[in-house]
Length: 311
Figure 1 (cartoon, helix red, strand yellow):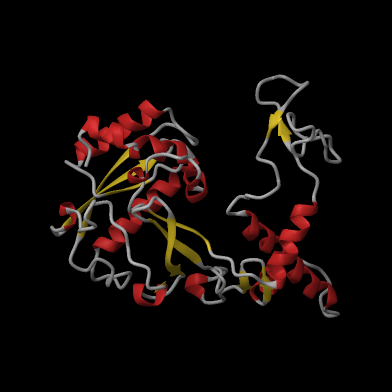
Figure 2: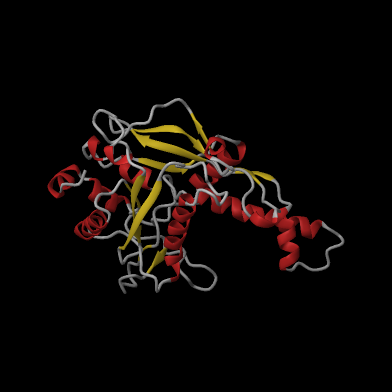
């Protein structure tokens, strides 16, 4: 979403020079071509072009709109038009449905299966193998990774070059170490510095990382912030057997700020949160988040950074 959200802004190219992001890597295939063709053939969810399609399900619930402003005559769109560009999760959701369908089909076809329960369905899912929209789909049966996707998880690693264009540096997939995970394509990395040198903040053995947490600990989705802090702790532990070869000579020092929202914040609010991180850490090498392209644009604007003395 960030890659697509920033691509057409027409902002100064230096605003995003050196930025790194990942996006789904989907190679052309029969499965993907069929998925894209069927998706384009669906009628637009925008209805008359202004108001959402008023279609309802069997229970009378709106399919494509929600009454967020108490105006029942013209409910707001629940999401974007269903034509491209699409959510980065759409293709994975598509494969998820097919995975369940394949598992259920296997159970229905098995004459020895008298009833389908959770255990039977789980066992059938672990045996599923098919060519999906996102690649080959299969699941791990190993105790430590039971149910995790075993294949087909692949991302393009993108970088903003000196001209302000997104370029692909290579692909990343889960593996035991970085050398196996990342496959570069020979494209040189563009750094934020005008001369493309390594920023001075990276010279020492401590890297200062700011973490934007959307909401406070009293909400259940705060768990994702705990995941971020946990993985940083695991990277810092060089003897636990987990990513010990990643940044072997550095320690990540982090601070977290709560933005108080699950969506986009106001520009001044997100800048204030960035200032807090910058002050708490005495400078920031990198941030995890914010997670909205509007917020990213706010904290990477060259004019604001210059006025706030943010390097």
